[in-house]
Image (tube, rainbow, N blue to C red):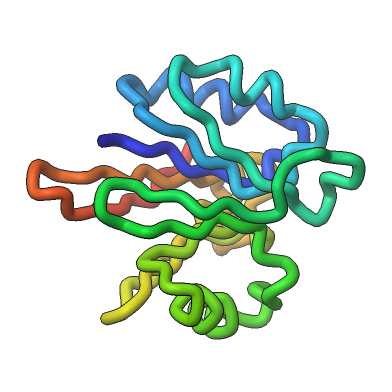
Length: 159
């Protein structure tokens, strides 16, 4: 299984569409919020399920604030992250994810990619395709792949 994880596109979808053209055979798209009215364009650009949550800039959105789902054997929590102070670090959101019984928490908001694999929890942030804030400021996205044994592997990719 191959999952494309993006966030914080802020209605500037050109780079998202470039990624869709570049990455083939996607089984699931996860958008961690701040789509700003681009829900239809994002979901209709792929032939697979698309999961999206509301970000802090999705003012009148009907998207859910968080999603509880399973990817393979992994219990996954998807949220934008702004209500868990992710700009100050990932500890609070990881603690919340553990208390709720998740294996993986996927969030956005910081515009900086992050892969933290701890013993009990995996925290993922794909960064931003539109307004990156990490050193080098390259637009980023993440691919999550489940191997034949069902083990997840994560790669941060840049345009």
